[in-house]
Image (cartoon, rainbow, N blue to C red):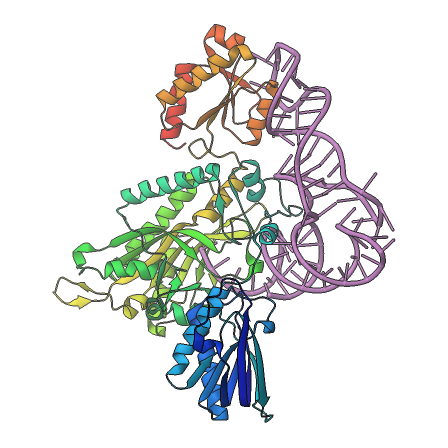
Length: 565
RNA sequence: GCCUGCAUAGCUCAGUGGUAGAGCAUUUGCCUUGUAAGCAAAGGGUCGGGAGUUCAAAUCUCUCUGCAGGCUCCA
């Protein structure tokens, strides 16, 4: 909205003729000439961007009151003056703004409102002192901005990968070839999971859930946005603010969670705890968002949005060593399962930005060090790189370019339980403070999946492969046989991910496509196989073709998938 | 965020101031195939967005966005 404020000796005007068809007829009184003396004439133009009417009126009234106060007048003339803008709002909106402003100003002033949508003759005499002529513009943020959706559509292009410095088995290249995921500039640092990629992610989750259930972890899920207060309590507000996305709801500030712990702690506090509940192991596959410097983002390795396979263990000081050992063992079990080689293990100590006193830190650091020594694992000290609430043990793994990435982390935290006043009732019926261990195994599901893709060069173990079996026909004659085999396998192994390729092209071409997708089992059916009742299988890219009886193939495949070999 | 690059069809890329191209993929025909590319035709583009220089810009300049490597930071 734009307006021109004129402090006048007098202003008089008279409506002559409608300027807009839709405008209602004026009453007899309004048709006559009107005059005001010693007034503030406000010439207004309401614009397209002024969609938030109430806010605009509020701001406009405030401005007018301010000026009227300065020039010390009680008379106001609101005068629609479309010529101030070439981007006018609709007549309905403009009328509404003026009506509402009129009503609000009438509480303190004598207001005359000139009719909207009429050609008017007018005459005025401006005083000429410094405040007698003022022009102002009101822009309300959050109002409907001007945009052109066709233009915007052009701006959101698909993300193009610069692969010039990447290796052939880079997870970003494999992700494209295998149709696993993509990125788009509308969501930097956030993954668009395609069906195939989501399959892998879900399998990793299923495996994780099973293992953690066996290891006596509970599993929870907490909200994505939480009141700012919570982060002030946890210390994130003070120590981690620059990484937090903010949003709001009904004038309350909310943080999009950058970590899962505060939410999990609220579940802990939801009911009284006793030493009998300990060690209380609580897992959460939590999606977190962190504001990162744009230059650090990279494929699945460094994201703004990622999924942590988080868990918090609440225990007594006596139990913590045992728990830390269990976590190290659990981590090593996962690495072994995937055949991943650890590059190194780090012990990260107190950072400059931290909560908790030095006594706490001394104990926490010493405890972690002792556990590592007890486990006889080699580790490096990474001074000052701990979390703001506690020191940590990090497991690092190499990628295809030889860079190392942190996956598992184990963090010992005495400070957060203090801040949240966590308690449990001990044997002696006294309230005591628990110790809290934060830990992840995969670290981030996305990063771990990226590491796995590169580690296996796309050739994932069958249980993780998005498509496990593809059946090809040699000629059109074999198409029925192919479909029959697919049905057969589907019935025998219901969870099997199987498809077929019966396009009218050569076998080498179909094999090539299946190989690019890194499908573990490529089954080929020709006249020979139909006649013999066997299938010819190309296993994990091996050029040697193995012949199977269907039943035999099903038995082996089933075992492999069930045992996650 | 900083430094250095990159952005042309779904993918890989050619085009360096003068009428937007190729291969693969897609669709449609033909072919009926023995383990990483059978043949032909057709369709497919505001050359990432915006601005500037120029008679003329995919091409030169500026700027924004995204990507990549490095720095710094992190799971």
